Image (spheres, helix red, strand yellow):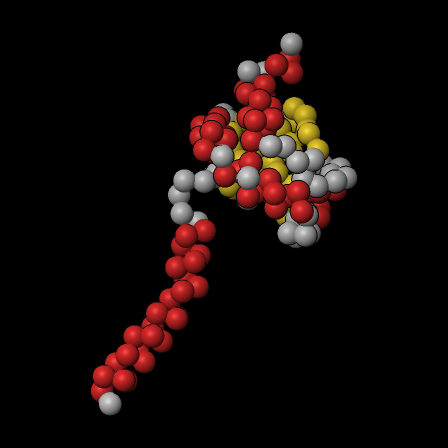
Length: 145
């Protein structure tokens, strides 16, 4: 009887910890270091890094594709973490920001200077190669030439 009770208790502890373990895996370092809008602007102002804002929504198919493919590219992760402050904005939860930036479709990709002055934007899905070229263009300040 004690053996059964001990096994039951261990199973109960294991089942209870699964959600916490899954969350820990989701937030494991190694991916893009996303910030909230306010924290990202503050970080950019203090670090001098340019800002990348990704406007998305849970229901958006291409947003999910970008999250699962483009944002998982090791080259994209390394480049964006080294050169940008990355911000994610869920347009369903932060409609005010979507209106401020006049977001008309998703995903929407915005680039800002470290002082929050808008550089430009690119609507729609970008694969890893396209996105990396765009990031490099912004860092090289090709838009000023």
